[in-house]
Length: 145
Image 1 (cartoon, rainbow, N blue to C red):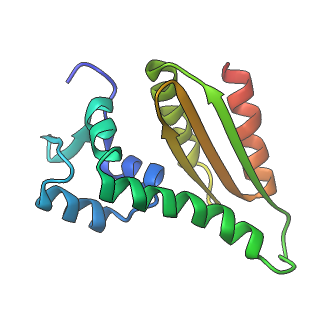
Image 2: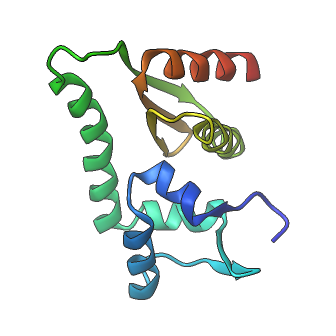
Image 3: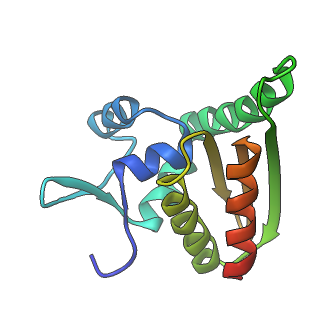
């Protein structure tokens, strides 16, 4: 595989599905990938196909709504929290670069979650969590462009 691929953990970060759920989808044939060195790898094309499965699409929609709902449902949090939604026109390549960037950022974020969706020339990112961590990610993403 020459192009950028995603592993199971990155896919779990992007979707909000657990790795166990994703492994179930692999067994059921909803998700297809390739094992490279014992690690599942997924191409952007495979992720597009997977994300557009009606069952998966609905699950992703629920997960994205869940991130925003959980943020709004917090009553007097003990720490400063932030939720940001970014909508941006993007090519598939730009969307892939953004999702890869966010996966990398999540390695350093202990209290933040994100959801990513690309559909027909448009990407949406939802970031939620500790205000400092979300702000750092947003600043790094702005500097990346």
